[in-house]
Every structure is written in structure tokens, then in C-alpha cells.
Length: 195
Image 1 (spheres, rainbow, N blue to C red):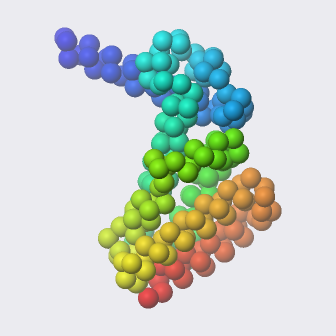
Image 2 (image 1 turned 180 degrees about the vertical axis):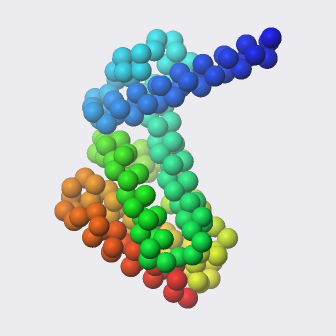
């Protein structure tokens, strides 16, 4: 009985945390970090102030948790390249299309953070490029070059991919999705298959 009650409490707690994170993400997209308040998050999530503060210390803490979730999804995306049986233009096109859709889904939050709180991404806990590069390279089997060269190429590919996705999705680089994907396929295929 005590175990069931504990599991029920843990489930409710996890659910309320997810509701707050989803609300923070929506409010962040609509209002931006500077204009967002804890009250906005409470209203959007439909939770009590005490519930919010049992999970987070303030709006920045909740925003960091949203960013952590975004980084986790990005890491999973880079990890998913290892599920490709071989690196071909076709498999890369499908993978890059998925990357594009993920960027599109989260571009409002990312744009808001970059616009309103650029220092947020420069702080040490958000220095993710090296981790993403290591995830992308994995055991090195997807790259036809040395590990050192693969890591260098992975860093360059990730920076280029994220910049291109952000600029395209935000409308700063007016190019069709298909054209962007075609260009990225050439870049990624060459970087991964060239010794």
C-alpha cells in the first residue's frame, strides 16, 4: 500500500513538472524570456504557486529545464544517425528532414532565448557542442576518417546545421526546405564518407 501511494505521488509530481515545463515553453515562445513571469507560467500550466516552487526556484530555473530538454532532444537526434545502416544521400536526406522538423517545432523557444538572453547559451552548463560532436561520431563507424578528423568534421557539421536550420526556419535565409536539405546532404555526405 505504501509503495503504491509513493508511486502515485511520484507520478503526480512528474506530471506537474511536465505541465510546468510545457507551459514555460509555450509562454517563452509567445512572450519571450524578458517579458515572461512566473504568474504567466502558473496561469498557462493551471498549477498553484506552491507547485511551481516545489519544482523550480524562478522563471530562469524553469527556462533552464526547458533548455535542458531541448538539448536532450538534440542529443537524441545526433545519436539517431547511428541507426542508419549506411550513409547515403537518401538516408541522410531522411535524417536531415527529421532534424529540420525538430528545429521547426522548437524554433520559437530557441529564437526567444537567443534574442532575449544570449548569455544563457554561453554559460558553461550550456556548452554542448563537444558533447553533440562526440554523440554524432559515436564509435566512429559512420565516418570514413580518423576519430580526430571525425570530431572536427562533426563540430563543423553541427554548427552549420544548427545555423542553417535557425536561419531558414526563422525566415532569415529564404530558401525552400527541399533546397536546404539537398545542400546539407551534399555537405554531410562528403564530410562523413571522405577519408
